[in-house]
Length: 294
Figure 1 (tube, rainbow, N blue to C red):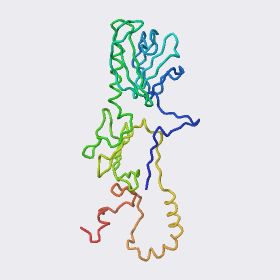
Figure 2 (figure 1 turned 120 degrees about the vertical axis):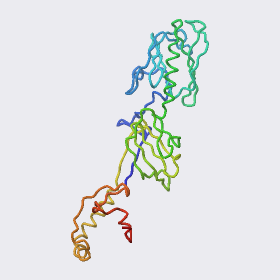
Figure 3 (figure 1 turned 90 degrees about the vertical axis):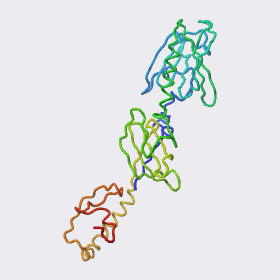
Figure 4 (figure 1 turned 180 degrees about the vertical axis):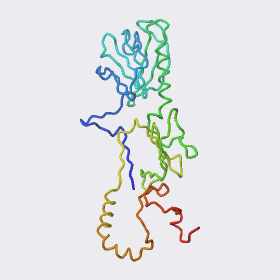
């Protein structure tokens, strides 16, 4: 029997006890130390715009807007420790509205409504270059891409991801292997199902109800374990070794196949076990039949 365990990143801690989870797209933060504004592994700058005013909180202050694949960063050019980090996962809406800016007067600006830790925040960014709305189109486009790609990043339970026992693949997703007969032991009785491993995520679904499923992207995984019940196997092996001398003579007396030769064990997919290789012409079904079918 084999056990396969998965630990999500929320449970992971590094050696010094501090969490190493990815927070950049999941939180709204103010006035961060400058090192927290640096790109984390996997984070990429998609656009960078100067002459952007934080009209809501720093009206009249010229700043820089940095658009990454995880968040929106704004910082004052004159005082960089005045800064914002807005994770896309906190964004509720992205719209435009007419505002009154100290530096631009009445103009169209980008309005972002967010929710973080059950607290709502709104942000207004104004482009100080006349006729330039690049900050609006850039952020709207990236946010749309982020929301449409959640399945690549987020844990999903009981989703519409399986149709007719087949996984609905995401763009650029490829199935690496499919394993049948995998038990999900999250409940007392357990459920037998199918395990699908792709280049993006791990997927399991129940054989009797394909809507009972889980989609777990690798970004959510901190550690996996594959454990065998080796102690039980070791105990059985020891008992066989200790009793083999006593059994040998009796075994040979009743042994019907005088020409028997030990054959190397092979994996049998039907049983999910390693068994001694069958003789030529012998099938697994024959071994279970009291009266051979042929």
